[in-house]
Image (cartoon, rainbow, N blue to C red):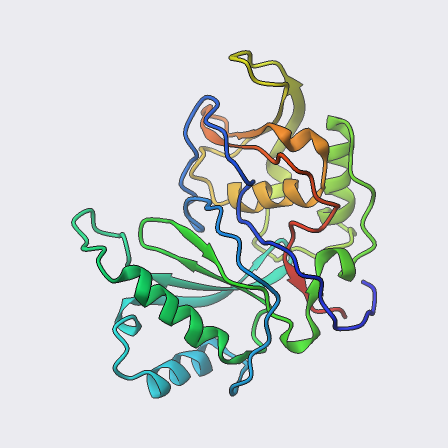
Amino acid sequence: MKRLATAAIVIALTLSAAGCSGTQEPEAVDADFGTPTHTEPTGPVAGTGREIATVEELQEALETDYPMAAWRVDITEMSVVSHLGADLLLIQTAWGSDENVVWEGVDEKQAELIAAVEGYKLLLAPNVMLVHGDGTQVPLAPRSDGGAVPMQEAFDLPPAPQTPDEVLAWLQAVYGPGGLVTLGETEAWLGTITSIEVEDWGHGLDEVLVVYTNASSGLSPHMSPLDRALQTTGSPLLAEYAIRASDGTGISGAVREPQAPGEAGWYYVPE
């Protein structure tokens, strides 16, 4: 990992490809991270409030600073997880968990919750995401607290792959054993890939890059990190792509304007 200045490039973080296509099946709801959304937060930001180093400190701060906030009782869980080897703060809410839920005021409460969290100096994770009870993902602006930088600044990434074989080789070189990014102990998504092909699906679509996996279904928690990892390659083949589980379900997406390798990735703190 390179040691670089803490100045961070402004990037748009998405948990799924921009402009998802409805090719064969609808996008799956991921068991851990929910339905990919196309929210593009501004970034990066740095908090000016108190320093927060643990989830417990964040919980205490929210309880102390916002005791009467309507959104506080809607938070069901907060945790820091490893996602593509980066620390990600997950804030899960009950919004949308009940089909009879009253949505009035949710947008306002969400905005207030985001403003509260972004006001702190977050040292526990440079990446933050809200996950609604119905699985909707809302990534917040990346954090430059603690010297975090975009993926493309933190690592000397290979050039964007141009063929299916090169896509697999890129993923292995960056995320595989001994690769540039050290994945978390529970991140086993790379090992689920069985093959990567380019196929003609017809229906007026261009050729589709299809990643076949041995994941049990499109609801597998391996889908979310694999989807984002593909986007970090910057490959032009992602103009139309799909990830398929062993039961034939999965997720489909489209990246119409390819970014350079790493630009669709998380923020990392250089070692």
